[in-house]
Length: 374
Image (cartoon, one colour):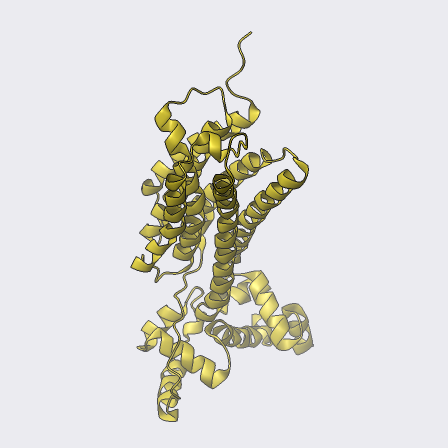
């Protein structure tokens, strides 16, 4: 009876390879806010495909391999392992920052892969050696491969952790620049980057377990990565376009702003509030507001923070709450529902309205209306 070429783990790897290639090649077809994001995501999918192909070639001993494949596979394996972290991290940066552009400095992320490649060339690492088959293997070669493999596990963990930090930073910035924020895609992005951190950490733990107890749990990586591959594709297509726009906040000069300038800025801002009632526009953000009042958006953010001690999000919603209180306390609007009032006041989310109203008044909208109208 002929021995089977592929077991269940190999089948998962093959499915992952096929799906990764399809997703990588299809990315240019999708419309995104930042065109660079789809190419960065395509690079990430391509890294996953190459990585999985290398794993299949390294660990499936039945697949016939020529001399060239024997020699080249470790290089592709290391390169893909060390570039998937930067690719995902830069993708997260690109979808959370409207100002994102590819900088020459980003090429430095190639250095770890280049250094490992040089080490592999110096010690003539092939498929047999990358498996750490210690029979006949000298100590320096063993150490080079062993440390390289640990580095390939650690580097993605660090990059994924930084990607999570990017999401947290975006989360804090987006509320300073927008009066209405779609929270669902942000939560999903937290979950996604957190899951990749957990996956990379699990890979490190598996390495420790393999060394200490020879536990054969490494194959679970394949199942986890396949599930994450589907999850990130779903997110990129369905949810990332819904992320609320944000621009990077650059450090301002430490020089104090003259009071006259602050006063002038506040005057224009208040004209937009009192006369134009810009806060009633449901999805207005700091950039759109600034354009309406004829000021740079960074000046608007700075003036609101300096003069009112609030970010743009809090500032706009405080006026919306005042508008809602006007409706709720007037008997002629008694027939209006809470939902109608919040929409008229500039809110587009009931949960956001309820949260802000409770925080600023200490009561729910219904309780406030009942008290005011007796």
